[in-house]
Image (cartoon, rainbow, N blue to C red):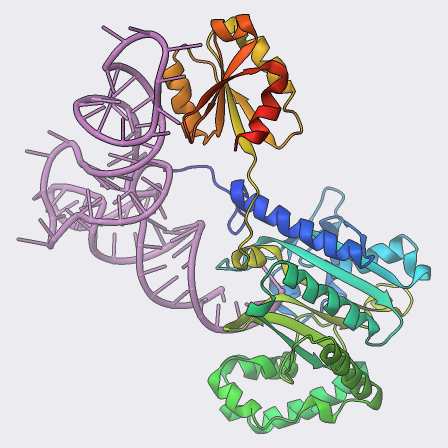
Length: 413
RNA sequence: GCGACUGUAGCUCAGUAGGUUAGAGCGCUGGUUUGUGGUACCGGAGGCCGUGGGUUCGAGACCCAUCAGUCGCCCCA
């Protein structure tokens, strides 16, 4: 069976799944709008260096997960693996860096060349927000406030737990990295194979290793809070106080680390309470991203959530349109059927016309498409202008005038 | 990128120790005569058994490779 197929890890979206995703996006837009975030949609491709310069050359995303190719003018392009870098580029390109503060929300497809499995696709969709403002925790709280309310709207907040950490500023992190490196080097023989490699590339990553041996070593690892500058320390305390004031429950996790290098100070992620393998919604503060891309030093905070991961969790009911099937019994009644059908346009009814010489077959078809009502247009009906409406769940039939059809249906549920 | 398991009809799956024309349920389709469906009964279509090699007189079953899916690891939303 050599069939045409979609690219690995890239799936078609149809029917109920599409409606669920659309509904989540709608809720996301509503919450964002009401907090005065503005929409921004950037292209799904950027020049490669937009990502390679910002995400961290040693990160897995840059090293082995990007869809990068050259186009016909020999430009090196990359399908975006995340949204933040493209938006940072966009505010520079559009000269928005003078209009700080800026608050954006976005959604769209992202691409990563990974081995697909549950909650991990090669093309997936993220919804996310970015706030550019003066350094400090106000923007952190703003986006966390939005995140919490979004998740509350989706009715999944109580399944999740918010973990936060503070990585310190660039200098703090450099110092901490060295301290960690020293500590791990002394315990090299106890570390897992992967972590020995991480020790060279980015020792921070060892902190959130799930390997049992690593976890044992991490127990006595130096804590990041000891190397934080006073400013970072103080602002982290303020952020936690604010979260408490607003009853946003969280867990401080000194082992929390993010995979993309542009983060500094506050980082956070929402994971499932009973399964912290992957994040549902995650993000943090970044101070140097815009600068790295050639803009002024503007700090920001943002997060992104995986739409497919959200879809797996939510239990939203899709409002179904009432389906009405019109059954003309002769070809020359088709135009009458369309005339009636036109009245239904943009109502909460979905209508369809089925023509077959057999009423029996037509009714079978009505069952198949789960119609709620059928309207029968036979010689008798058309002549008298009184149409037979049959309620398919009760079996009841009524003769209704053309102008009263919708009104009748509204009252006959 | 590494490992485990899986791959038979549109869907969910049976196919025993390798042995004639590959099965079931659901779905699809036709019928059970007139302008009335859902249920019931009778018929029908639909499978290069993921793909490519190999072992064998003989392979859906065994072996190898490959592709895809699921689940771990890595990483991440």
